[in-house]
Image 1: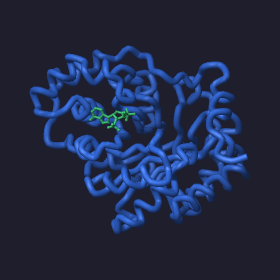
Image 2: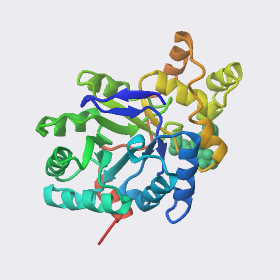
Image 3: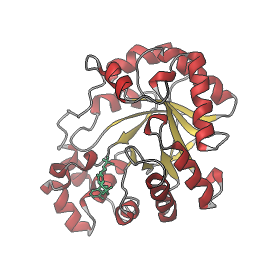
Image 4: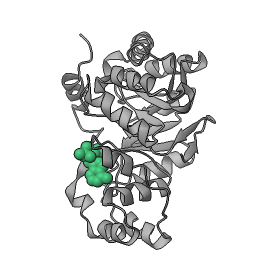
Amino acid sequence: MQTITLNDGNKIPSVGFGVFLIPANGPTYDAVRTALKAGYRHIDTAAAYFNEADVGRAVRDSGIPREEIFITSKLWLQDYGYEAAKKGLETSLDKLGLDYVDLYLLHQPYGDVAGAWKALEEAKAAGKIKSIGVSNMTPKIWKEFVPQFETLPAVNQVECNPFFQQRELRELLAGDDVKIEAYQPLGHGDASLLSHPAITKLAEKYGKNAGQVILRFEVQDGLIVLPKSTNPERIAGNLDIFDFALTEDEMDALRALDTGKGHHDPEAPGVAEMLLQNYKIHD
Ligand code: A2P
């Protein structure tokens, strides 16, 4: 399993299994069990995915030692602010059935972000979290919040795929050795991406599928990727990207697919209210 060293010295597997939108009470459990059997050692969940309990149960039932699996969860907006964040983390640990998580993120950059971050810093010092990070921070949002933090985030998890490569953000974060985690690295299954000739041509050359070419491109370009699938063949395939390498010309050809635009705009007016309305993890 290829790993990347974070700016706090911890190591993270460069391919993780994402479980956003996989239902709780069964499907997430099955998918995570399949992923662990296929060799994944990195699972990415969140309080607002409503499936932390399934993830925890699948990890325990796998029989794989806890320290061999990298587990990420995320604090939801409803639990921002210093005191609420401490409780939110405890609820995540409780649902996961774990005494620590490897990475815990501020899922969204709104509200009392600095207060919530302070709670994460303390939980890291107490050993309840190994690494702390943020998510959905654009360059502008990063510059607004991160100077208020005592500890630099280890990662920023953002939407990232060949059509939206986050070049400005990557340049900004590289200076501080903050790693980008790509969510929806396959463009959320976007057919125009998966069937793009620049990608299918390489798939044919290397005897891989389009998804594998995309993930290989991203990992080779220094990203941590979190592909999601509920199909056992694709779950296994998405990890099978370490037996080939793209040439520099091929990397450049895929870098040229960037449009600079994604689906989710964290700076859009009303986005925090919309998220709070759509994802209620408790009353
Ligand atoms: P499925 O669960 O049927 O495999 P993302 O991780 O970017 O959000 O993309 C997830 C979507 O892409 C899901 O709809 C998933 O469907 C599909 N998918 C996952 N892996 C692949 C792959 N290797 N090739 C094509 N589609 C894939």
